[in-house]
Length: 191
Image (cartoon, rainbow, N blue to C red; front, side):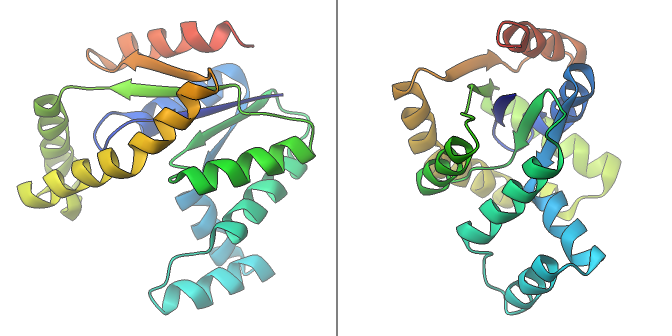
């Protein structure tokens, strides 16, 4: 089984691309935000624990997120692999993910990073706000802050993965199909 991390700043298209890539390569799409919401909605023990934590305005601890991902992996052993969207977010989470995968005789195979020009990110986020009404995409200051937070939080993960030889930059400029084809070429090499 292969494990791909997909990264990119807000507006890079990683969510859109993740869904398409997971379908094409028979990968389980692991979006931690979607997984958290699903666990809570299903009323599982894990969901109840997370709901209690989140209702206090606290972040779900790394070990709980890793437990949730481990459970999803264990339930999908017949798949070709996994595509992680939005996780890990810190080097500590990356190390925890690697440890959990190693326990299952798996590893992170590649970190695909969509690289998109700053002006294009702002344009995409503004357009997304108009089309979907996402409040977090309407305010230019909020957009800039989200991009800056991504840069400050993600840069250490990129360096960590680069040192392990699994970092793969991907040109995130162009049409959805052009970007999809670029990502697909990189992923085919490891499938």
